[in-house]
Structures are given as C-alpha cells and as structure tokens.
Amino acid sequence: MTATFTEVVLSIRGMALFQCQAEGQSFGTHHVLRGVDFDVRRGEVVCLIGSSGSGKTSLLRCMNLLLEPDQGEIVLEGAPLFRRTRTERLKLSNAQVNAGRVKTGMVFQNFNLFPHRTALENIIEAPRVVKKVPRTRAEARARELLTRMGLPDAGHKYPSQLSGGQQQRIAIARALAMEPAIMLFDEPTSALDPELVGEVLAAIRQLAAEGMTMVIVTHEISFAYELADRVVFLDKGVVAASAAPRELLLSGANPRLAAFVGRFTEQARLLGALAAAADVRSTTSHNKG
Image (tube, rainbow, N blue to C red; front, side, top):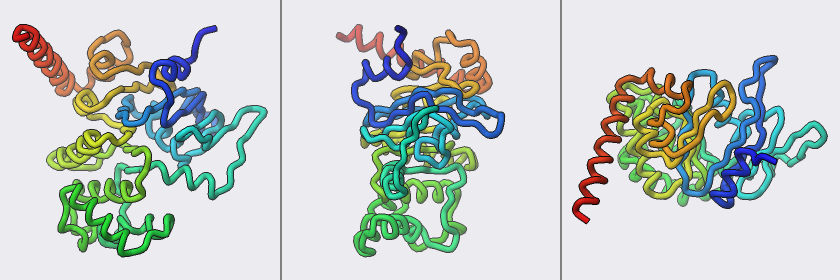
C-alpha cells in the first residue's frame, strides 16, 4: 500500500507538533482545499507559497479553527483539536477548543489592532482576559516584547500614530504575548509599503533564530528561500510540492511551480544569484579544507 504524504513525512521527521490530515474546505460548490495532508515539526519554519486562490490562507485559518474544515483531522501537540469524517465527529467543548486555539499565534495581513487602545494595551488584552494574567505581569511581559520587536518606546502610542511596519511588529508582539506553541503568519508584509517590509521580515528572522515554530504564507520568494526549513507549494487546494527551499524552488521539476516562481522575475534572478554564491562558498570552503 502506498504511504500517504503525511505518513512519509512522519516516518522521516518523527513526532510532529502540528498535523492536518485529509483536510478539506469548501464554500458552497467551490472547493478551496481538496484533501491536504500537512504537518509541522517543533522548531521548523514552513513557508506556504502559491497563486491567489490556491488555499494558503484557508489552510492557515483551518489550523486554528478560524475556519472549520468540512472534513479531516487537526492535531496539535499530540491532542486532537478537530476530527470529522463521514461516520465520526469529535465533539470538544468550547473551553477545550479555546485551550488548543491559544497555542497558535496568528498575525494577519492588516494588523487587526484595536484602534482605540495603545500598543501596550493591545498586547496585554488577551493575556489578561483569556489567561487571567495579572496586569503588572502582563505589562512587564508586553514591555519585554516591545523591546524585542525594536519598539521600546511605542507602548503609549495608538495604532494611528505608528507606521504600518510598526503596527505589524506590535501585532507580532501581541501574538507572542500568549506564548503560543506555533506562530501563523498570513502574508505579513503584503499591506506594507516596500520600504517597511524589511523591518517586519527582520523581526520574523529573529523569531526563527530563537527556534519559534512558524508557518508563513508569503509571496516573498527570496525570503522563503532564505528562511524556511521547508517550502510547501499549494496549487488548486492540494499540496503540489514540498521540500527544502533550494530543492523545491530551483529544480524546475514541477512546471506549475516553475511558472509561479517565474512570475517574480526579480526574485527568481535573486534565487539564482544566491545559489551561485552558495556554490562559490562551498567550493572555496572545500578547497581550503
């Protein structure tokens, strides 16, 4: 019997932090996801790429049940969060679902900050309301996160007083305040002016260096090449390809993927330059040895 995508991955990678199996999602007669088997191991950075409508954001939203799949199973840290088949439906209480959901930190395209609250108040809201963290401790943690995001003096400012890049870093801090097991990013730079993209990507790079488990929906191909442990290409609601960045993005073996990457001509040229530089470094290191 042929192993499924998930079985193959689990046999190689061991116990996964997060698993989606045979997941499907439809809106009316439109099937956005068509049986996605997908997993993330602890400490891994996975970038989801694909054209608009391929199911990237829907998959991300299913991971924390902002969207409820039509069928399939979602497992987080070994505990089932969702299961629905033709013959079975896992019934969890709202408290159990919420307990699982708080383990996932979500960062949206458009920040979604409360406009009537300061940056500090945005960050402490969920820990105080959901986790009942005392205000003094929540504020101390929020200030640590503001410093970590390079915004130590922004706590008293309202979102309207901050740039888009600053708002997105506040949104990242807000998600981190809940101490999630996994961070989910839905095109975190798509709403930013080009000159502000770098500061948000730098914050995400820092999280990767610290070992945070992350799933990132992105159109920044060069960023995915540089940062990801694995790149997953979604096409028409299925996982069309999944591999290490260099293997996936530079091989040209998948015509649909090659066409997609080819649309980003400047980024594609950069990938080639990065690969050439890596080859030079590898050859130089070998010769020195």
